[in-house]
Image (cartoon, rainbow, N blue to C red; front, side):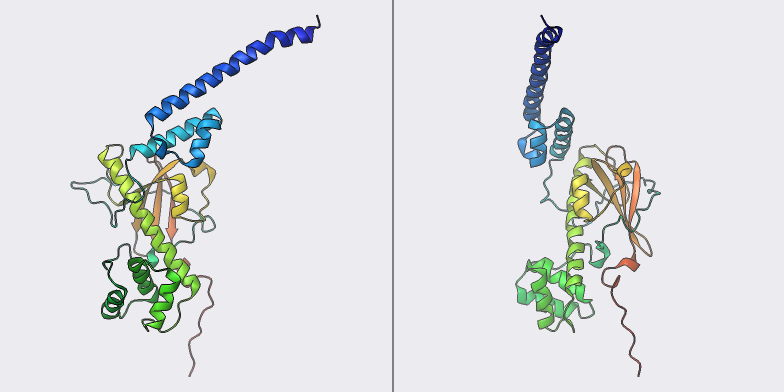
Length: 286
């Protein structure tokens, strides 16, 4: 008998046995995972990885879903202001690294207030409140208040505040986009605060001084659209602290697993999208 044929006849059953063992291990892993974690905790991509991905991808998907399920917290839960916890709280060391301007997101949260105090009411009542209480407000603040409270599209609200003579000139579409992204930041950050509060209650993390929130990697990328995180600083999940200094704001980012300081994402006034990159208006000369 040919030696190659004999080797194939010997090796083929061994390979089949190894394949069968891998298939059984995968089936067992899937069964145990489904019993332990509710299917709703998995994203579509994680479900694919669980059933058809490599073992390392399946394990990662299960780990992420288990962490998400442990929060008992959906993205519809929202905290409009920083978490207040009784007792003296410790401070954390701030990250030393500062993300470069080219790597940072263009979203600028200081553009709009962290929290709005207008209750959802009829449009004419909202406009009346804006007229009576916001005479000195900047156009993007009026736009933010109307769009957030009314639920009307931002572009329509920009037209409304101009037609109602709440602003003296039409609001530029780029400014509308910048204000909408800033409000989206605070909406998502409020959800991150709620997740962080669950972690505190479950005693998975300690409460610290500051404005803290919790995000998965994909959630952080949505919070800061366009951000480019260097590979050495990437993690599966993060804790963040929004810090307001005298001349700038920063989102300090930490590893979610051990609170290792990773980097600061600075929001510098000179990169305010209402002014940055736009032509300067020369003063009128009499």
